[in-house]
Amino acid sequence: MRKAFLSILCLPLLMSAASAAPKVLATIKPIHSLAAAVMQGVAEPELLIGGALSEHSYALKPSDARKIEGADVIIEVGPDLETYLQAPLQALGGHAKILVLERVPGMHLLPARHGGLWEGDEDDHGPTDPHIWLDPENSIAMTRAIAETLARRDPSHAAAYRANAVREVAMITALDKELRATLAPLGNKPYLVFHDAYHYFEARYGLHPAGSVTVAPDRPVGARRVAELHDAVASGRIICLFREPQFPPKLIETLDEGTRARVGVLDPLGADLTPGPNLYPQLMRNLARGLTACLARNR
Ligand SMILES: [Zn+2]
Figure 1 (cartoon, rainbow, N blue to C red):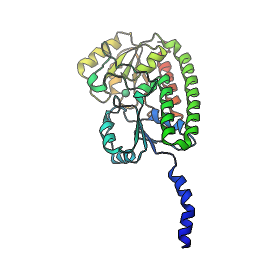
Figure 2: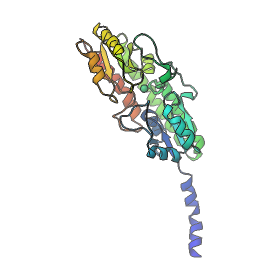
Figure 3: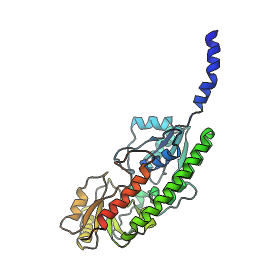
Figure 4: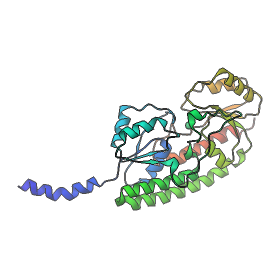
């Protein structure tokens, strides 16, 4: 009898625990970072793809399937990037709200590049470039969309999500200004990237890339293509070749052999960075630093 009375007393406590923050799952580090900033002081989102894995092709593990099943809100870039995720989301993410960032209001999309030294291929990347987080304007749109989605799903923390979003937007606005100043001197320096990941960043800051080595970072590059690229590098008009930490440096070293071009590193995903609210500005500053370190030096 006394026990039953006690459990009735405890009921309101249990109920308030049940209305705790939703379980949020973000697919890749940069958008996980924006979600973590919006959720600061409330809860931490989970990350699906950690470590130094590619954002393009990824085989889900059983533990990933459990994360998807347990999520209340799933935040993804969208089918143009996370092709591997669409079927499991349909199958496992039944009760979750899925926020597709490439479709949120204010998002500005660019096409994947083709022709010249751009190794574009619509079969692989789709017509849209999915690396949307590399334009701060897009990250502002995503931050707002994440906050509104969470506020609707979890009204008890709506004020916190919205206040965090306002702070994050101010941070990104200042970051954008800083990057514009840092990158201004690099406008006319041609370089080659490993894969076509930086269109948003380059368009925003007026950079001058000459092309990309590969379309799908995990797909082998043919001998003819390697010869064509090596000729371009050897001609002297390419100042830098940028490799990515997610992939072995061998191909870039081959292209650089016997030329005067330098080799730098660019990482569109934050492979080595600790996930969390600070990852996004670190990733963007690292890109600016990587470009400056390689392109701004005299030959
Ligand atoms: Zn990519």
